[in-house]
Every structure is written in structure tokens, then in C-alpha cells.
Image 1 (tube, rainbow, N blue to C red):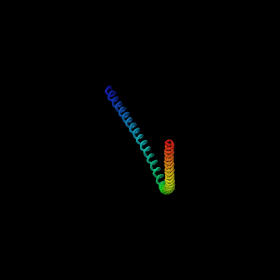
Image 2: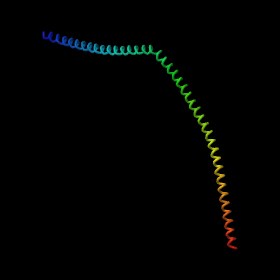
Image 3: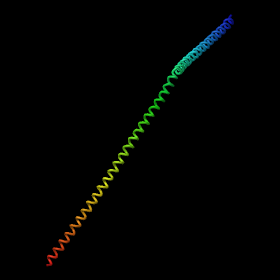
Length: 149
């Protein structure tokens, strides 16, 4: 009997340990499988979200393309308006430059005429001064002649 008790207890103990180990392994496998399934579900949800966004993008693509064409057309129109404005400014500046050159030519002619008048005036002053010097000299000579007499 003693042998039966000893022989029966280790088997029960080993059987309990094996069952506990097996239950732990199954619990661990269930936990890993749960995590794996949760990760797969999260990835599938992300894939569904990406598919939804791609479908929405494909649906909106003609609208975006049309907007792009509109933007290109508007940009071309803006460039044309800018070019016309620049040409008008250049034309206006050229006209003003021509007017200013004409006015500058007139002012130069006036300056030359004034310069000639000043030259004539300077010549007249020189002649007047020379004439006065001659008169003064004649007066001095006459005064000397009077003293000598």
C-alpha cells in the first residue's frame, strides 16, 4: 500500500503539473492569438480607411483637375494683363522721356540764347569800361596839358 500511495501521488502530481502547464500554454497562445487578431483588425481598419480616402480622391480628381485647368487659365490671363500693364507703363515712360528730351532741348536753346545775351552784355560792359578808361586817359592828358600851359 505504501507503494501504491507513493506511486499514485507522483502521477497525479505530474498530471496536474502537465495540465497546468498545458493550460498556461493554451492561455498564452490564446493571448497571442488575441493580440494578433487585434493587430490584424487594426490594420484592416487602416486599410479600409486608406481605401475610402483613395476612393474619395478618385471621385474628387476631375474636380481638382478642372480647378488646375482653371488656375492655369487664370494665371495666363493674369500674365497677359501684367504684360499689357507693363507695355502701357513703358509706352507712357517713353512718351514722357520724349517730352522731357524736347523740353530739355528747348531749355538748352534758351540757355544758349541767355549765354549769348550775357556774352553780349559782358562785351558791352567791356567796351563801356574801355571807353571810360579812354575818356579818363584823355581827361588826364588834357589836365596835364593845362598844367603845362
